[in-house]
Image 1 (cartoon, rainbow, N blue to C red):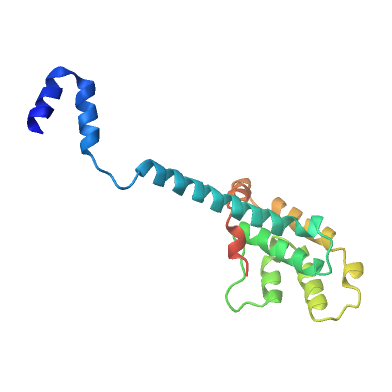
Image 2: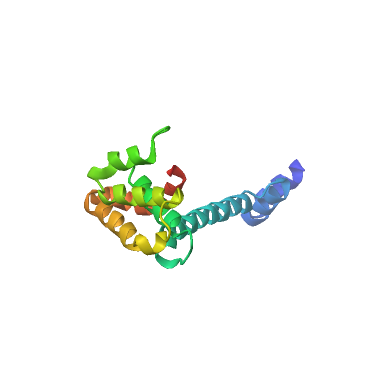
Length: 164
């Protein structure tokens, strides 16, 4: 093999490169592994964005008996995206009070959500304009949040995982 290697080196560089490549035995194709990992990572990000936009747009687009749940969840997702999350053990009412400086409408949304959840309103979707209240909360969040923080909130595909 050494004699063949030296002969290839003397003849030309292409034959020498072919010889070196033939001597390398690699069981794992690194390029294929990296491409697969990149594709999986892209799929995870696209799926996370899909879930995020579904959760944020479900009260606007959806027409459901559970509109009050979708609206409240979308408001919580919007708040979580800018860093306002319920603490462990914090009640919904206490959280709404804490974020009322950023979004006063969150108190109204929380109160209406609890009334519907506990069955205290006969026709919840007619009694409260859920879409309007959700849009009001979102508008207040945009108004009271710095632009750089809103940009990070839009770019983070996993912010909905922080919602409690």
